Amino acid sequence: MSLRSQRAAQLRLYLRAQLGGICCKCGSSVGLQFHLKVGDGRAHHLMSSRDRTYFYLRESVAGNLELHCQRCHGAATTAKVRFVRNQRLFQSIGRVPASAPSAGCSTPQIRSE
Ligand SMILES: [Zn+2]
Image (cartoon, rainbow, N blue to C red):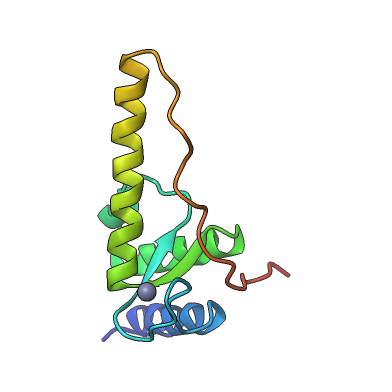
């Protein structure tokens, strides 16, 4: 592993610790994944692992990053997709959808100093 990759891996561990080290939805510590409260349409998944790590750091500083277990991450993503799909359906028939999925958890965020 290159030095740059090692630094990115250390940064991911640091980010997980800063976000509490557990899923902010259910408290699980298994299969943790970073979750954007306000997503970017999965564009960040086109980045290299290292670039994505620094992207997550910036999002965390902006208060837009949470830690989810695999199950909760999937549920949150599905809820967002369903909301967008329903929003388009409601707009097509001239109605207003109820509300967006919940904003998420209240995990501590990294402060920019
Ligand atoms: Zn969970």
